[in-house]
Image (cartoon, rainbow, N blue to C red; front, side, top):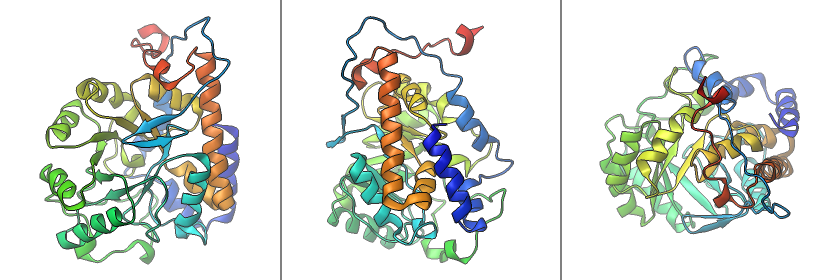
Length: 329
């Protein structure tokens, strides 16, 4: 873990109410997937290039039309107001300073518009409410929708389900009857491209694109849904192969350093997302903390890119050793 992120996490533990910290830190089941997500990045091995000009390293990219200074984006996480009085307003401000994209949760404390930003979407049992959400997001300038597909029901958390602040009426809960048909419906209702988040299989990735998705997001929901799901780092190569360059691929789950981010990009991701580190940064330091977290990850990524002989994100492709740890031994 990057030292700054470790410091912010420790500070967040000190300042957050114990039940909020447990809610954000915990996973479902036995927390097997939660632990494996972070560890799996350490199994990726790299094959650096030598004698390349890396006197200047560029981490910029364009993602669905948005020009960004960093491929480290903010994963959608709920209820930032639990951790800081400025909530999502502080998070968005910090992300903007770092030149990062924000994905705003359906369960946000407030409907903040960042620049650029995407709206995360659950298809709710009250479908009219879902349409209202995506149309309002489009009106506020969202550039895409992120349809989370791995949550037909909210899984029980190992450290307990946190209190009345996260209770929602039945009509506002996710609809377990949701199918891939919603990709086209959401796009039609909003006029926005739709990515599908929670993909851990190549055949699912292909099916999402066939249904009209503009991208796929490899994710295990932070280890908070089906426990013992495969780590995103392990699922990523199969998804990248299935997508075959037809659409952007994002990945989250356990990314805690620029080296983790480099491994994800080397495996074929177009961008990486972080969730808990942003929450800890917000609790520890508000907008300044969020900006510092993202800047640290981006600088760490740039340093790792230079050591790997990659002056731009385009140069990162092909750096991953397909044999895995110890050359596949």
